[in-house]
Image (tube, rainbow, N blue to C red):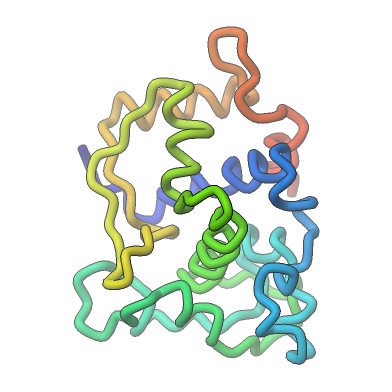
Length: 191
């Protein structure tokens, strides 16, 4: 299996779509503060939505030193907690900025929403999407607190990565079974 690095981000839009379908998240425009009440008094963070995080335009600082990679000695011990603590320096939705912060915040949102099911975001991805389409992951990088790396942790074979891509091209259908609602997946590729 090959380390997908940043291509790992490609799993989480469909996971959020599945969580919407399963009633765990209201919509792509659900305020992040519903899952992260620590943000309620911050004038910018309180306006960040799940869509802003997926689109990398939430306005959060990209703290690469403490959040990026997997073997860096400066990595925060809990990447999810560290990410929800970074500053928001721009209005949500104003500027696209590539980096790990938004996806680790999504990790914390998913972790909190899935706690009642005793599932990690990775468990949910496997159970809800990958197993039904016959995709197996190899190793998955985790932080020192046991959280799966959301923006960059996956290892997959080329064959399994292609199968996942084919499932997306088929609008969430696999062998005649709709795994994730087509309309929700379609929203992920709207400009």
